[in-house]
Image 1 (cartoon, one colour):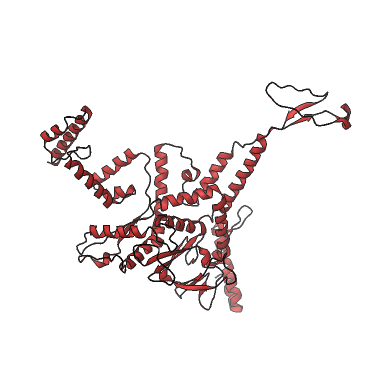
Image 2 (cartoon, rainbow, N blue to C red):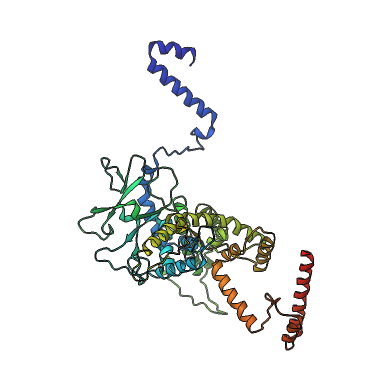
Length: 521
């Protein structure tokens, strides 16, 4: 404190305390220019808590995002691209990894689990309308557009419900739009906030779910039922700590997307108007002709046409500067800003794939990390809980009982690898050569290579083994399987009918193999 404040404190401590706080605030403003509001800097602030901010804007953002998804092509394209990069056509791939007590993967049991999970994936939801990849894409789209999505684990026998899957697994998912958990449901005494009931630590213990969609209810709008957290999935986009409800992916670019849509519509209308040729007839001054005799002349246009004008008349066209030559550049600049706010890439959103191999690959590499983040978010919030609940209920399958191997380490029963679509290849040859070099240098595995192509490594190995065995049984020598078990004489005899190019290729393979053996020695 200063000497003045010390003196004031002896007379009025509260006054001295307020002066000291004001001085500290003033010093803070002097230290950071961004904290000071000026003519050119608005210094907008958000002092509300995370839940207060979402409560004030979340529902409006959700409804605006839905309107854009229904009416704006660019918004539709952003969500479509996120579906392709996060979930993909085959959905999130799940590879079970059960192990024995020595840490070895039980391949046969893992294949059996994958087969059963694939059968259940044909009809995983309570309606029986969607396959698992379809349901995952819808869930992802809802979570990105609306900010969140919910799902109920429907376990075991439930009155009036016959699980749609025909494999006997007593488990289905009830996917719910966020409207089913009302923002307006708040009860301080019961610790219910925005439809979520929490305990003293902020942990959600119950979700209060409407019996029907609020837009379809008649009379009992807020009649809800509590569902325990252990039976609910909640996949949301959270931007702040302590935030209970998610916000739309479009929250930061919504006004930009709306402006782009309005601007493009205005330019299209202007271009349509300018496409209709218009002109005027100039007639000089009023003293040159009788205004009462002025009429409208119908002029027919055609190749080589001529027309006669009255004395003092002249024809002038109405020139339009549409379409705007700067429209594309302006629109692309806005799309780059929109891509930055959605974890998307400009090229995929704008469908603009110009540039060299290096520049396109650089963009793919940078975008791949964003895709991995979104995939991890989706797997942790949706795919992993779904698979684990399915496996838990699959052990109760009475139609086709699941037998656990005696050597299984039960602690690894629920272990699995989850992955979505991988980074696409621009130049397959360069990508393949790069993977071969990493595998040769023990910096990568063949399984990683297979997953990088979106394939199941175990399935690739099985198919490859089957092909190699067939080729060798029929003495078919291929470029990637020269079959070292065959002798030189047999190999020469089997190639008598081959073309000269095939013989040369096999000779090169033998030379490479011999060189490799010399290097090993």
